[in-house]
Image 1 (cartoon, one colour):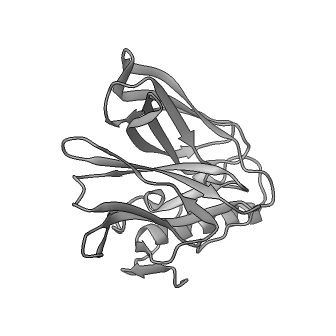
Image 2: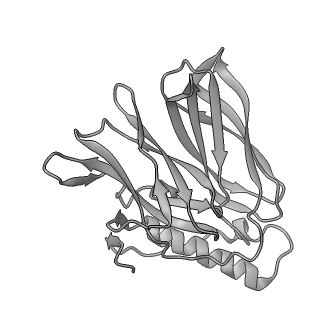
Length: 247
């Protein structure tokens, strides 16, 4: 492992569900490549991830922290300064106390892989990433740090096109839960697809949430409900979905 990511807790890899990877008419080599990537992510999700050295190719905007009575959401804007696509980037979010001690929020080995990794950022592109904390944040200043990919999946074509759209809000003018449709407009099946939502009022983020789609087949669509943390009164809603299988 690279020195920029400190790992702990060795775990046994689970077997990837091959039915997810076999969608469409593809070569055996392609299926095997997808299976290896999914297996590698399963292994990584069963280990703690703590980014200790920042990747200079990715600039991280000031974290936007949204709180309610018992939980918190952190919205991050990430910019890829390079001319190449960056994938599977480890990311740490945490709280830096006055003493300088850093307390990580997303380093548990029970989290979903994309709660501690960024799926993809295109060349010279900007991406939004959302983390939701299960409890109130400790006291201190929130920080975020993006590291170096350990997987480097091969990209030999443009990124698959995935999209997410709003079906209905459960309450007029906003709501804590929104119904969404997630679409895979490519022939490449998607697995563990992260979907983020950021609710805006007067251009300021006042609520945010995340969910994940376990499997979205070739040219497939699915509906889901995404829960927002924060204010239920907002004027606009940004929805973001990032592909996770690239070839």
